[in-house]
Image (cartoon, helix red, strand yellow):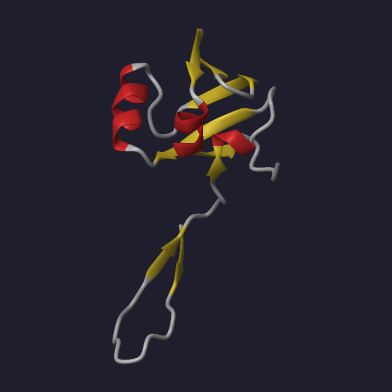
Amino acid sequence: MTSVTPFVAGSVDSTVRLPAETSMPLTAVPAGTTAVLQQVCDSRSCAMLRSLGLTDGSRFRVCRMGDPCIIQVRSTRIGLSREVARSVLVTTADGAPV
């Protein structure tokens, strides 16, 4: 992570952490891309995805975009609703912008 210290009036020490890579919603990633899970914004979806083996830092392949969005985690394919896919923030495995 990169540290940036912005000027804030009346503040002595305000450090903002910026992610080294720019995360994007899973819905913005095209089929065929290998992605890395950064964060799940919805707590209900987070618990469900963890139980299916999709944890922070997991690499997976996007098999099909749409509703459902189909991803492959290890040897298992998982169908995600568009709403759940929108709450999943990822980076591409190679770090290249989409």
